[in-house]
Length: 108
Image 1 (spheres, rainbow, N blue to C red):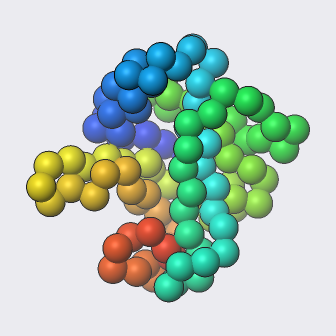
Image 2 (cartoon, rainbow, N blue to C red):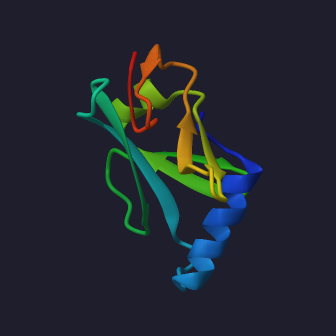
């Protein structure tokens, strides 16, 4: 399962509205090789399904990932923090054993 914080939900809904996205839109997240800790998070808005998609829904937000990435993202929460000290969107991943200072890469 993948989760969405209340803050991330609000920001996603705002962005969907500003971009005039349809009700078919969702958040696509994945994990790729790279970054100073070995693995990097990817996030984008999408409305096109793929054959290997794993679909989760939390708080009315659909989150889609591929089969390989779900192994790294299991029980992860997509969060958002704004303001001067905010990180924007970031992942709270209980599987990560190490993260880089910027929070964009991790290892398990």
